[in-house]
Length: 118
Length: 111
Image (tube, rainbow over all chains, first blue to last red; front, side):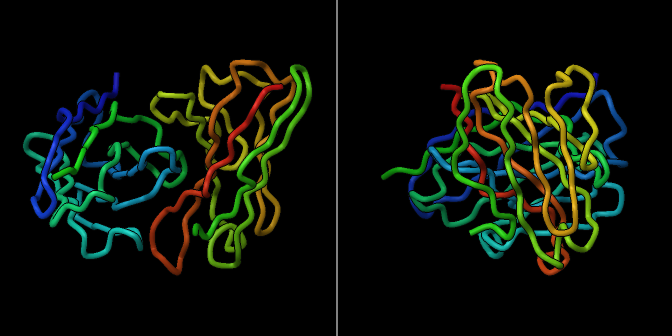
């Protein structure tokens, strides 16, 4: 069964950085895109970035440009979301999900809650 | 503000049919890119509801259906059930942004 397991909840101070992980199993990690989606409290879903681990192609959503990076380590089938210079407005649940253009985000991680507070 | 526009809320009585629209442009839906739909129950992880415009993953009840025409798409729920009360999001590729984007989401309330 395909599965994505995300790292646990984090509490950070403004200005700090954070790297969230997402480990894939049960599928060929190199033949799917892995995307990152943010959901701020009470708000909708936002595409932050997406990466194809097979060749490293990466794309970023307009609201995330310059705010961080997505990456992956194929050897351990793990994707990462790096968040830089955290602000209170980065408080959100961050989801990773498996993606194919024809099939959508069909497998989701359980989400990582990030709280940014002084 | 998303490039895919959805109504913020739609409501209906149990058993009714409702539709949720997703309006795009020539940069996304109108450029013949597929639309996908997601359901997010309160406090839960989003789940794929419709993929490739009108296909249901296994386990999704057939009262959910999708359609697409030109730069617009729609999700229909026939025979609305109390457990359908949730947020619904459309998604498609936008060639101007070069990434798949979500609509703003629609909250469905069962009266």
